[in-house]
Image 1: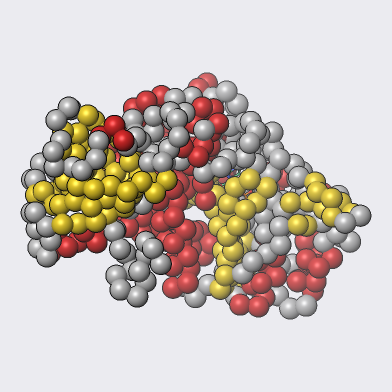
Image 2 (image 1 turned 180 degrees about the horizontal axis):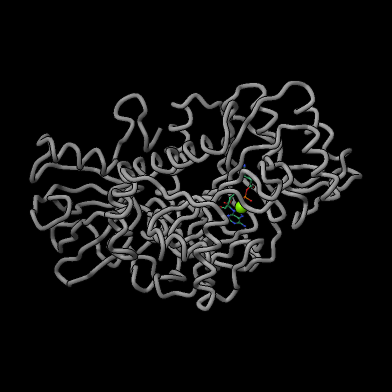
Length: 456
Ligand code: 4AD
Ligand code: MG
């Protein structure tokens, strides 16, 4: 193999290995090194030039020097992909403690013509219209800010999976093509399925409830589709949902589980993406790290819907949508609770049954359901969870009330007919967690290839 030698070093030409060796003292000033990457930025000073090279994890500094480098600085341009050979130049002012003086360079794949965006300039990228960023996505994705977001996304993915595995959860894969809606059926994308009509699923909810009967603790993560015409900064038409479900559990267990999972993911991301998190702290929200670190060791607030409505209705003057018992909470209300009242994540519990899904367990009062939404500052709703209605008669009565066809949900009813157990679970919006962790305010910015009501 040309670039990767799995047998020997696994990481031929990897800057990370060079950094480790430099720290360990096995590579020193003047030693030869070989590295690969993409030219990120060139600052030409005449007799010498600073050439920033991008690797998967970072941008590092190389130096071109007339007479010492064997190529012309004008022969390279940003986005050329290169193999370069040079020498370590120890320099305490450099973030890594050294630069690499370039001697020879091999262009593997050169950029042709000028780039549609100057991706190395973060200030310019920050001020660019989102549309410009989306229309030039292939290049824009290479910008350090978007790369940092994608790293955090990767950290979230590993973080929650390792947490759930450690807790004994089994992962499974549900279908995306379905005949009916998990959340009641509104706003679904229709597709042709042979000579029938099918839909793209809104949530794997019912499938994971079936799997709970197999393994007791299960989870799935994958794309879900919602055609809500909500062109807001926190709604996507295709997004990922992390969905755990647990048997022998009530609503309090569900909240404990989601709170522990979110804290564990935060801790994991802080530990594994320190450079990226420092970047967001510096450029977007200077208190981000302090707040996230504090959160790991404190409890989220818990308040009933009825109490939340009492608190919020006192501030109705400042809301576009007035709050009264029975209305669904809007983002402005959710953010008010988390940002003005509690100043941390909040669970709102026991919503009126009329504004929640048919499968949620009806409480003793007959008016509310055992549901809990986790709301977080800056974003609003992050998780929707509930204890599920396990009483067949209550469930069918509720479906009748809502006009849901029993035939369409026959297999779901079987779940309760043939042996069942109290269980609960939640769905967490993957992209919204990334928004929360990075301080990035628009969901289109945290998706590599977003699909929203605003278009592709
Ligand atoms: O609250 P939701 O609709 O809950 C469910 O789908 C349940 N089946 C979950 C469960 O109990 N198993 O969606 C869950 C989460 C929301 O809290 C929100 O974070 C996210 O998914 N979400 C969206 N994220 C981006 N764009 C959208 N259009 C979203 N709709 C929901
Ligand atoms: Mg919800």
